[in-house]
Amino acid sequence: MTADGRRALTRLAAGQPPDIALAPQLMVGFDRALADWRADLAGYIAGGGSLLRVVSAPAGSGKTHLARTLQAEAASAGYAVCQIDAAADHTDDDLALYRAFCTGLRCPADIAEGRPDKGLSRVLRYIAVEGGAGSGVAGEEARRRCRLAGDVPVPSLAEYLPLLLEALRAESAGILSRDRQTDLEVVLSLVAGEPVEGTRALGRLRTKYGGPLVRALRKVPGKRDARLWLETLLRLLPKLGFSGVLWVVDEHDQADPALLDRHIVQLRRLSDRLAEGRIVGVFAVYLVMDDFGTRIKQKHGALEQRLQPILGASLTRRPLAMLEHLRAIEPEAFLRDLGQRLYCLVESGPMPEALADHCRARAKAASRLGGVDVRSFVQSVASQILDVVA
Image (cartoon, rainbow, N blue to C red; front, side, top):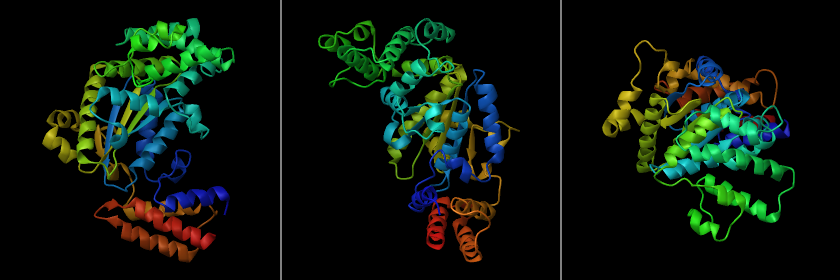
């Protein structure tokens, strides 16, 4: 057993979903859904379209695993990726949503190479230094690309980004003084919606930080216009070197129902923006609990109407689908195949018979009324493999 295989199985036995690098290797039964979504990423969305997909499932059935597989697919296609935790990050406050997006944003190269780096500042540094076929994007080239985004909701941000990218390139070259570095860090926080020393008031901050970047920054995102800042970023990022943006929102079973209800409000607003064509180049995927349909029927009738299946559309093309319907394989067979893939993390070839018997028994126990308890199955089989193969 390799050290990497042991670490992966230990994490899985503890109930943690596979990381992004491992997720595709353990994915079973979603070939059709992933093929359709892969085609959407390569074609419709990369060409400037946007799509919303909502997938519902009970706790422990593999939503997060699917999300991480999709992130790996999007990263390999050159997409910037952002995952938001509905309970921890997502509220009906537009500024909180904007900050969560800026915090969770990741470069495709970082995902592909397993680096944990994330955040708007990291993505902008990547654009300035490594984007544009490795030569970086800043100055006049950045201004040209920002103009290609057309009339964005916050023009001042589109005008300011080239200046910010130029400073980030100078930082990479090691030619910024300490004062200029401080100037840069202040504006990076403000553009991401974060306060500096407890305030986002530019006038107050300029009394202490008088660098050229702070002076050139005309406005910062606030609660009233953060939604416009988010839409502007989503319009600009594809022009600055990414194929588009994959935006994943993940509900969790331990979340307070009131918190989950708040992010549904944001989902309705996002669906409106997509329908109006205000957001382009975005694949938004919401992974929700299995009571989602009941919740929107009771409290969010307008959203329910937006997500009603289109007659004749395949499951993978519907705005709202159940995870078990996207998984095109019978539950017990799915779990047995998953068990074999777990075993292949540490050994090649088929499972020993005793381990295969355990896998079959757990597959039967974890299949319930057409659904599957993936979490308990993976924990049990991963633990057994560690005991048998160690």
